[in-house]
Length: 70
Image 1 (cartoon, helix red, strand yellow):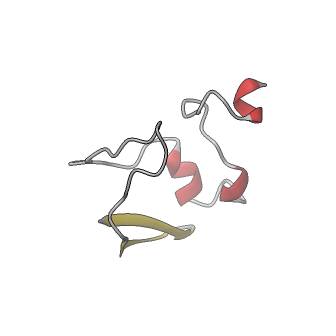
Image 2 (cartoon, rainbow, N blue to C red):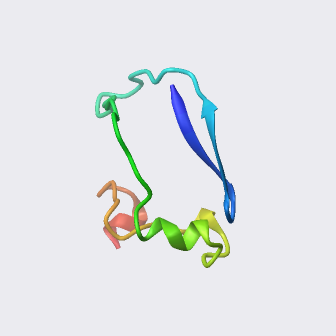
Image 3 (tube, rainbow, N blue to C red):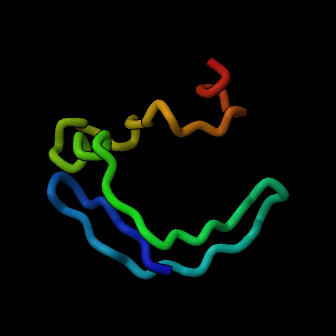
């Protein structure tokens, strides 16, 4: 599987990763055939967000963790 790897501002690369496997009953494997960078991702790409470990977009959530519940 090919995955895009964010390495820092203006630095991304495609890396080969192992094929995904189902590990939990709620898991799903989705085949992505096309993708592009989202406008909100440009803040990360241009270095306007200082740390990607605390960056979470508003429209992606699991609905069950502490942060999603709050």
